[in-house]
Length: 148
Image (tube, rainbow, N blue to C red; front, side, top):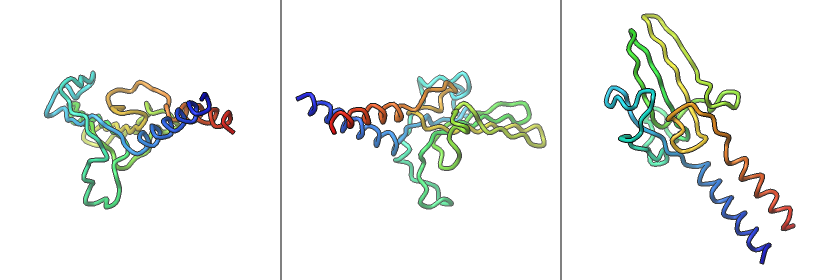
């Protein structure tokens, strides 16, 4: 009975990992439409979007959104924020999703581009949370050793 329970727990863990790996939900807003989209972020009136339901982009055929993004942009001293699903980019450069790509340009322009996929709604803030998939994998591996 104990082995059946462990086996069931391992299967449930694997199912949750696959669901986690192939779909993510991201906050979707623009600060020009709703000031709550800016930092500090207030998601009380924001929709969360299932990225696997996104239609895709015409200029990127076959590429699905698999990450969340947050863009912080300063143009002529005015901050703008954009949050949504991301199609391209690197997740957590050096394994830390708080690390963002920053660019400055002429005419007083600054852009910070952050992508993440650690959890649903990860584009809300910069708090680092370790990937739960690794933990689930380790637990499942230990259960499999016991079963074999």
